[in-house]
Image (tube, rainbow, N blue to C red):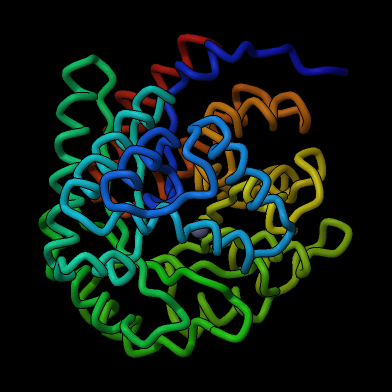
Length: 356
Ligand SMILES: [Zn+2]
């Protein structure tokens, strides 16, 4: 039995929620080229199409460390106020064009201070750009709400400082914290001071875990650090044998811990082998709180519409499945409960009802 085809235009119009998308991985290729010229940064190519292809190829290495290395060129053009304002505004407009109604954007402020901006200036400037984008998106009839997650880099020692930055900006659009960067050799528990501080401040956080590294990283992120969600988490399948859940997998499913899954990105870093076989489908079917995400739209050459379309075409997903992961994302968003409920009931469900 084959699922009915859902055309791309319909998919694009469906309301979407994305919890895992990096600001510095989602720039428009033409913007990277223009901003690089303005700041005198040398790129592998100055042709926007060739640059997009370069990113995709470089990211397709099957290795998380090389994937991360491609960010050098986007970060290089985001060190000025102009660069940050433009990339943040365009980021929101691109999501709106993709049918996204709620997004959590994440980035590491400590990687954006080479041009002389202070950490609070970086955060304030990005919020300004996001607000401009949200105003424009609303004016053109495609409103999108964007909350910000600030990332501490797991290989550096500024995570406690970034956690304080999160709390300081909690009333200015920052909704949570994350740690990012290469997993191997940098376990989440190295950053316990940051996580303990956030818990004392009642501030939620997610942790990149179970992508390059297996079950111990997921266990540590949840049970030692106290994460409310897991970035990727694909390796939770190591704790599931013939559909039977181990203790940790059971905890993740039964406590409704959201898994921020990013299929295309996982293929590129070698965390999964194909869309058809990607664990997102089996985990969805087992009742996990699976969410669908882009991770890095430029670097992975993707959009939410594309991720949905791949799952529909190659893994047999239905519109109901797409609605499930969208509602899942909003249930686990770092927004107040009443706002999540309103987005689900007033925006997402009516949007899916119109095509079901
Ligand atoms: Zn990520």
